[in-house]
Length: 231
Ligand SMILES: Cc1cc2nc3c(=O)[nH]c(=O)nc-3n(C[C@H](O)[C@H](O)[C@H](O)COP(=O)(O)OP(=O)(O)OC[C@H]3O[C@@H](n4cnc5c(N)ncnc54)[C@H](O)[C@@H]3O)c2cc1C
Image (cartoon, rainbow, N blue to C red; front, top):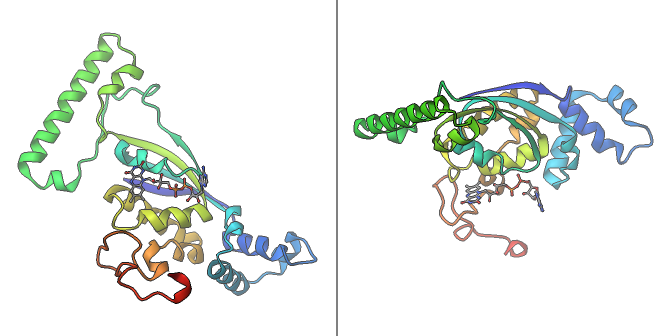
């Protein structure tokens, strides 16, 4: 899988901070931005995050090129609705050359690895045969596996990135989508370190695990003493 940040809102952290300051300012956002220093933006972002005032984070967005993701993972990705996606079509692009993802649990056992590969290749041969027989790609694709690779462009604003990372970096999430958002986080950290640092697993923010069973990183809520107001 390859993940590259291809576009993003310039000066993302200052933009969030200016939008937040504007709400309490007599002057407009242009003047606020002109006078803002980086330390100020950092402090404002921290305040917004600790008070849960996250709407200013919607003003900045990040666009990623994602390549070599399985269709199994892309199905999960596009469930996140506060984002924009463009995905390679299996109707308009014929899969005469098929690439696919083999999970490590399958790859590391010789008996499963060999059969998995043989079956995918067999399915692919039949797909190509159907195309030769005049079956349109939009119908022949019904035989293709979830393992088939896909390419996407995804744009997400920073608020949604914070939300999605909180659930998809969690060990309860599936390994491939977890890997995707681990890479997304690394890309954001380069251009917006303060926002990147907020792309956290939900338990890192909560201080406990809110799932039924903990992976061991934090104890579950039930086994964590809660203040009276939170019970
Ligand atoms: C570990 C894990 C396992 C999962 N397993 C399954 C499964 O077995 N089956 C399955 O079907 N799905 C499963 N999902 C997908 C999950 O149910 C959600 O569809 C997906 O995570 C999208 O997240 P979301 O709904 O929080 O928000 P997003 O679509 O990312 O939207 C962000 C936020 O915007 C708000 N929002 C968005 N749309 C609406 C709306 N229409 N109305 C009100 N508020 C809205 C909500 O506050 C939401 O949290 C799983 C997800 C995870 C992380």
